[in-house]
Structure formats: structure tokens, C-alpha cells
Length: 260
Image (cartoon, rainbow, N blue to C red; front, side, top):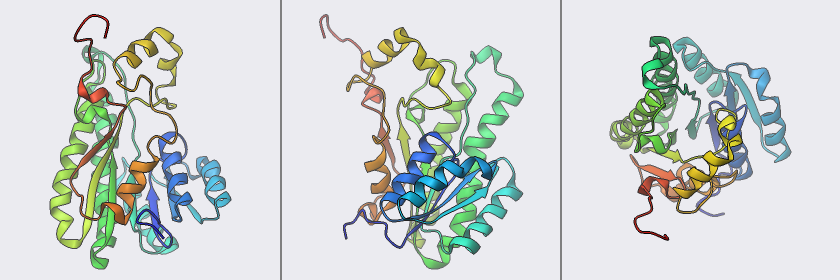
């Protein structure tokens, strides 16, 4: 066994039907965890279930709409009843609306903030209620590089992710006395179903890569090590932190001199 081994642990991953969330679920299963996975429609989780089971671990698919408090409470209760105590929460469910700031509507703002920030808080609260009596738990809130950087066209998203960073620090203080760690995993630019259309523009991809010191967007697997670190005993004395896995774009890379 190593500090990164999750054998005997049970994880809960929200928004696990595709993209990064599906990848998180498979990574945790590969490290030995059984995984509760959620999506608004549990039928959309079939592919993730198959992937987890192929790794020899148990998958428990549940319906969850993080914009609905009753749905959050029901999913947390069902997870505890079907899977037993939850050791790891990956608070991943999220959405985005890309528009110039002048075009953002009231409903656009509410959709993004209710999903990414309010829903994330109340899901963490519901799972923490189960962790506290056992004095053990790892909560990983999924943020993004927009936790620390602003981008045009992403005002609601950036506000929500900045809020996730601040929420993470507050919850770490609240629940540290119960031996629960709360950290934020913040990916940089990864191609997902939400942003795939942007990567069809080769000029934009070149522009992006010029600003990433490692000169490429994130790829599947680039988040695995950081996820397992935060989910495992390897990070037992780390809480309230935001871990950026972004190829270095958050350093604010620009051409400071000709030829560089």
C-alpha cells in the first residue's frame, strides 16, 4: 500500500456522466475506491458505470440536480444507504454560459451561480454531515484557473469559481476540527464537451498555447496525480488550498522580450 491507495474507500463524484467528472470517477476507481456517481439523469451514467466496473470496483449511479436542495439531500441519503460512509467527495457538477458581459441575462447569472457555487456548497454540507461523526473525510471542490484569473465573456463563471475558492477556505476552517480536509482542484484549459467548439478554431488554440508555459492545453490524465493526492492520506495535513493544474497559464505568461 502507498499513501495514494484508496482501497476500502468510497468516493462520491457529482457531474460524472462525461468530461472531467467521468475521468475523476475512473481515476478514483483505478486507485481502489468504490464510487457513487451522479448526473441529473442517472441513465446518462451508463458509460461511467461500465468503466468503473471494468476496473473491478463498484459503481452506484444516482440522479442529482444540484440546483434543487431536495435532490441534494435525497442523493446524499441514498449514497449513504447504498454505499455506506462516504470518504471522499469530488464536488464537480458545473455549467457555464459564455457571453459578453452586456449580454448576460438575470437567468444566465442564476443558472451558473446556482449550479457552481450554491449547489456545491449544499452538496458539501450534506456529505459533511455524514463525515463529521466519523471524524474523517476529504472534500475536493472543483474550481478552475478562473478562481485566480479573469477572462472576458466569463463573468458569471469566474464569479462562481472565485466563490468556490473562498468557500473552500471557509469550509476548511469550519470542518478542520473534525479531521475533514477541504481543498480546491483548479484545472486550466482542458478540452471538454462544454468548450469543444472553441478548440475547432486553430488560431485560437495557437493563441492559447502561446500563453501556457508548457505550450499545450490539458489532456486526459493530467489531473490524475493531483486528484489522488487530494483524495488520499498523502494530503492529510493540507486543507483550504487551491491547487492549480494549468500548465502554468496562471503565471500570466506574456512575451516580455523579442524572440522569447
